[in-house]
Length: 164
Image (tube, rainbow, N blue to C red; front, side):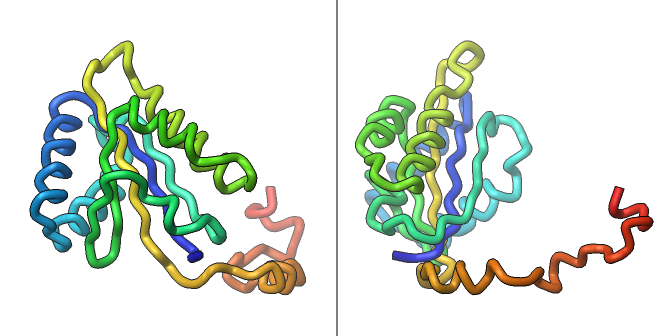
């Protein structure tokens, strides 16, 4: 298990078809640096069309063997897969529901698979996994519940305009 950044995104139209083709090529002939460049670029352009759905979160407990899913390709920093909406829905059904993290992943896959079918007939679902570090233990979470970290930089004065 690992602490990991997870991204689920949907791309529509010709870009979706191009991305699906590229993933097929990478499955046949791995190009780890290209996978990493793609993942970095997708994240950087999350608000740009033809990205029609984008969700990113940090998961501290989900099993690494569940993500990034079927047909994954490996970069040096990222693992990723590209799925049809039907494949994403099938994977969501397979995720399980024993733990909240499984439910969260399944929900994001379903949201991405729902896509913009009324507007775009062609779209692809991309799932990206970036391992950040080891799994966080329950004890580490309990320790973090005491106090406020300095990086939050919360104002002390209720009269401070930042408190409004």
